[in-house]
Length: 201
View (cartoon, rainbow, N blue to C red):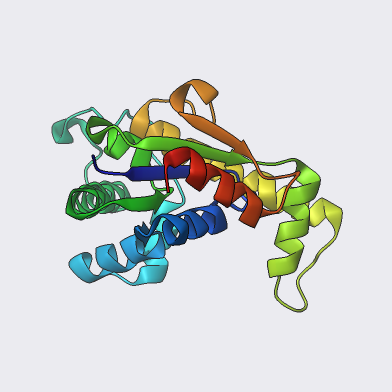
């Protein structure tokens, strides 16, 4: 039976590190920014632009199901967003069918729903998330509590809007996941080891 793990996460919760550790402990592939690189390669767009598009829902009020004939004429940004999501969908499907893997973010749980992945959502208290952000901050960045909280909430809002636009599901709702993991109280290496044991690694 194929082991496919998808990870949704709050910003600063350590979901990316948890995914990487799980892939190492289970001996399976790990995909995150590699997906962005492959989309950029296939679309001849820069990785920075693709990443920017993937972090925001399309700026349009029509639902995704509305046909092209109803789309505003010349809405190039919306069309670009849709094209990138289609490429993302195709690439994630290809990667999951190729081998066991961990896929971080990018609506992986929804895109791979027919393959029955183990869907994990990673969250933590605000103080823990702020501390992780501080440890990754570049020199000279504003590290005040107010600035960090504002950044964390902004990224979470964008992830929520993007996820809900493309899936129709509620981002972070426990009913949409098989396992919700609180990373605020224990070291990530201990949490990942426990999750790997649960999965069977």
